[in-house]
Image: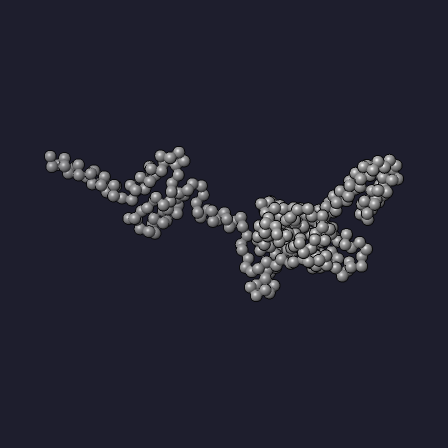
Length: 293
């Protein structure tokens, strides 16, 4: 009888030890939560008061309580997806005249991004935050005292500018802007400065398309897919590729003008070829380089 009691006491002791251990509380958490269809596990329900803190932390760092990737993997992936934040204030030049824009574009040969916005436009305000963030990664940087940093890390590969619509209505209307925010991408260098083009005939009309690579309306929700992506594409393009894209934009503008001219002629029921050619030539202005056969 005594031997039977001794043999029975050992399993009973083991049961009591397991019941008092942290594993029992952890098991109860899993059991309760897995009754749900989604089988989610909440972090705050897991505890191990009797474990050594350093051992428990090490063990839990290997466990993904929410499902998916671990915290360390999330941090690693985030570092790969985003550029490191550069210290300082991004340089964004304010344009207030045609001359300002010409001088800005003529400064050097880097890619130029120009934002056209209005102070009363809510979408423009949200867009401006993303625009500043892009300039933080790619533009020139000022230090806290307002001095332009000259070290290699602070000189960007893109230059940024902005034009406020309300203060520059005539300038913005010359771009044919119908909606805001509006973005223009220019190829720097080779663009005549304001002093060089001041006496050029029809300079006000011609300067708009000089060096322009692309332009489009863009709301804040589409900023990453339109502006940031386009800038990244152009930064990985050669100068010849950028020049080719500029010529494509110029060609499309000429095509649009010719289409407008043809439509206008058709509406007036002008039947002779000489009159048609005359109307198209007037509409296209100096952009036509040869007569249409």
